[in-house]
Image (cartoon, rainbow, N blue to C red; front, side, top):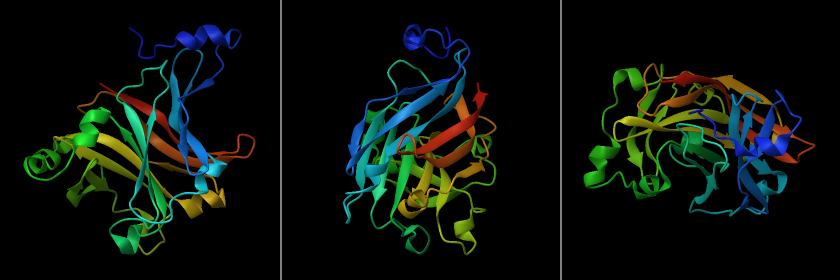
Length: 244
């Protein structure tokens, strides 16, 4: 069975080997909307996966805590393992550690686990041991280090100490791995609202674990860009390697 089930190909007659973009359902964010997208070539090969935020999605956002959560479904006509769903978190005052990440920003969680499991995570009580279960050393991405504790509805975050924000630079964008129950369970680009509004194109390579429990496509690059013609910001995973 092919990795990508694309019934909509019949609707794209004449595209042949050209790449095309499939969007998920729009969800209201701020005064605009956000939706997932998948770029696939004519042979069904995954090119990129990400979230598109309309220009107005950055306006009218809640100015104060608590954090706002927006759950986005992947396009229904494609199967892109290990990805299950995406949650965009808006942090109007940032989050801890405040000296580094205390800036208004978006966390974009690409979850491998189901929404039901994700939303049931407490990282407290009996779930604390599950949340903080040790990873196989080969599943830890090169250079990444664990944070002190887990976060409810998310899991255990792992950061790259080489990132500029840990070396005296102001946080603009960074890339997090997350774990739950002893396995990598999400990847997470984080980007400030101000950096999005600057419309500066950004792209960075990221390390990939040697071994993974959740098989599928892992990005070696992520990018952030604004498309003036589409009036949207695109937070994108790309340059995938398949991990079996």
